[in-house]
Image 1: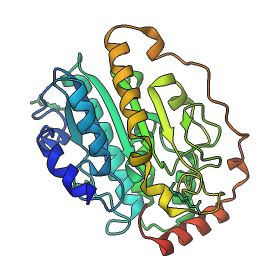
Image 2 (image 1 turned 120 degrees about the vertical axis):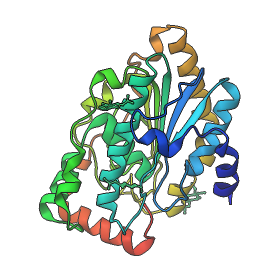
Image 3 (image 1 turned 60 degrees about the horizontal axis):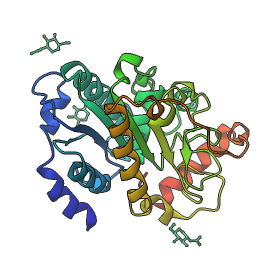
Image 4 (image 1 turned 90 degrees about the vertical axis):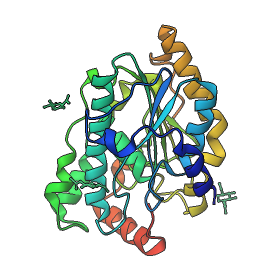
Length: 291
Ligand SMILES: *[C@@H]1O[C@H](CO)[C@@H](O)[C@H](O)[C@H]1NC(C)=O
Ligand SMILES: *[C@@H]1O[C@H](CO)[C@@H](O)[C@H](O)[C@H]1NC(C)=O
Ligand SMILES: *[C@@H]1O[C@H](CO)[C@@H](O)[C@H](O)[C@H]1NC(C)=O
């Protein structure tokens, strides 16, 4: 599997994956770009399929390193809800630790599927619908964990970020200015308030394609879509991240400012009821058991 080959290749790039997640313990500051990658549900420990992109970028930006987020990435045992809470805390801790320890190091965040959710939770805060799930007790016995995600990180922890790339994010919101791909609806845990992410301007991209049942719930389901983001967009994403790094490192303001937003279809997510969402979750659980 691509996953295994990449995992082996990326191993050499991984800088103290578990050590660094213990906050400030043994962080090494790379000369190039520090990438922080969160894998999707059920992927082997490490950066998952997105590691292939990290590998290519490391070839283009000398002295770069990859840190894979250490979290359960599970659908159950622990439950998706607990895993997301754990993972969000891990991304927050990692981002905070690198920013403190390496104030001159530029950072690039990547997340696929559940990994996209924990990454966007960190940058953008907890979506209301996620909190509503906890209140309803939908599918979880542990509301405290679910609600522990909290607000977006302070600006001081996003200032070194050159790019955030999300693939198939369940918190995808149809009207967000940072959307890319063909998806037209919102995700299972849609992010109605995305102001904190909007503030990143060109430094954030969320890729969602039509038919992905996790980020584009209203479209006819095409599960294949959820599995091929890296294949579909790797060239575009590698160019984007390297360009962002080059411009921001070179002090070109345009790379971090808001540009003209891609045209988005009108927001339809507001119309999705919680009942519909629970239905989707159940369908999703039955269909694959992977998110
Ligand atoms: C690590 O960070 C914690 C909390 O910020 C602090 O109490 C501790 O002294 C730090 N340890 C080192 C080795 O810097
Ligand atoms: C989060 O998950 C990691 C690894 O999957 C585990 O080592 C850690 O204890 C968990 N932390 C919490 C707070 O559950
Ligand atoms: C489902 O998605 C895959 C990958 O994007 C695509 O190749 C395929 O044509 C799609 N199938 C349908 C029925 O749209």
